[in-house]
Image 1 (cartoon, rainbow, N blue to C red):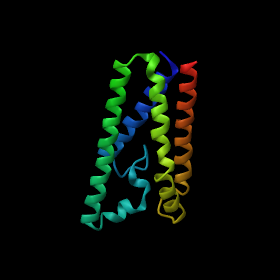
Image 2: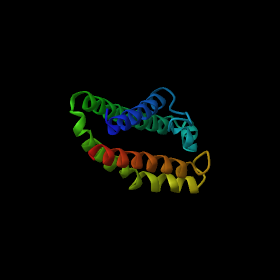
Image 3: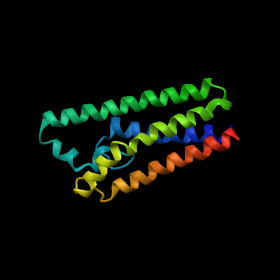
Image 4: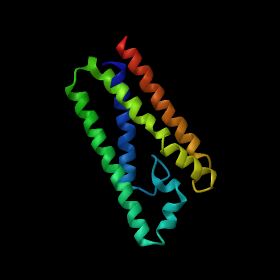
Length: 143
């Protein structure tokens, strides 16, 4: 098994944990649950806003589930020598976090809307680590 396939499997496990957290424990502060946002608890005081937030959380979970199932299908049906193409795709798609999501979560973190403090930095470093993993795995698999 090529290293890119192992990296994809590791990423799948991480995403599966996130989907479980979002669907069944959305208020969790673990597995990237939305409990890190102080607004999650505050929204419970306004059922209309809380329902919107729950809808969006479940939408994200559903989108991640589609992504997971597509990656599993790719792993099972595409020749392992072509998995490096999916490494490139994952690097590009995961990198979009830094376009819209990171600036927003960093702003909320600086405005004391996230707990624990500096969670945005930890999340950013975690995502950079995943990107580096895929870059290295893709390069090694192609060589």
